[in-house]
Image (cartoon, rainbow, N blue to C red):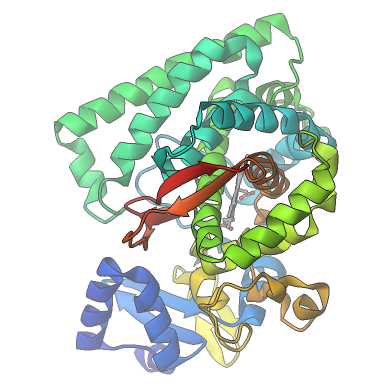
Length: 448
Ligand code: HEM
């Protein structure tokens, strides 16, 4: 592709690009929104030698994720020892095989089996909370989803190990969150800094525990009903009939841990934040929970009856999509409308930008669960909403996440009201996931 053809895609040039990148580093969400407003649904910019294209029309996004997915790979970031070659990062035939192997672990019935763990752990939280207690709701939800992830992954028999895993994982996550993933990160990781040492120790600790659990499980051959058992038993019947190596199992376990708890925790933290500011929505949701539960403890069976819950959570993830952007690397020249995107270019699709587009969501910053009635949904293009991605790489944990978020709220909401502490300013912090900046400071009130 010639330089002239590159220029035919609208986008910032030279100095403007520098300004855009500076802004992007400071505030990626508004930088992406601004270039879309200025240049439209297909925007080109360049970072050094890397060409990048931002696509913001739902139909173009559908084409990348669904129709032409085979022309794309996942961009390979430098830093990857934690998740290795797990499902989030692998590509091509290997990814297809792993997806086939892992899909049964996320079968509806299997997810229902994890539901009781979700309820039990949430009830523990409810027992610990006290009337008038002040908390950071983001932290509360992160600890809860991490505990649920540990339990559903390794099961009840290894509570002690799950604790070690949780702690080491928290260390790695916290240290990874220091600073945004940038080009200097790989270099910085080589330096003998204390945080690098702590991170590497935590990783070794994680590996030791995970490999030991794998070995014990292989020896016993027992199905304990948890995710690890499913992954251990999985055989690629459509392929060569083999299972996973220990190393691959380790990578997949870590991937599920990482991909599976922070996203849902953020969705929950944003839900509490929005409910606190919209008492009419909170009241309607509470009414639905009390009507459906009729004084009983939630069960997995009630979730399909929580219709307003689904509308509220959909609207929360529209306004604050936990995964705020998806990227792909083009493996051969790719055509979008009248443009050609060259091989090796990066395609960036931002849920945050599309979910705030006035064409699909009038008054886009307003929190309004009524946007999620079946009629309202039918009037929008499908990929105007893609919090879980789409196509063959659609989030494998989506049913798990819906079940978890619904059960956590249905368990806590009838007993607890959370009030935002006066004067709290909660901004967005787009790290790997979209976190509430500085947490969500709240006061808990026990309902009469
Ligand atoms: C609200 C919660 C969640 C959100 C918003 C979310 C979002 C996403 C998105 C957008 C992708 C696609 C990334 C891409 O195409 O590049 C994805 C993939 C993935 N998610 Fe989730 N996720 C959530 C919960 C979970 C849970 C609970 C699990 C596991 C228990 C999980 C495991 C995964 C895995 C393994 C992939 C890779 C799938 C593949 O490439 O085949 N996620 N997630």
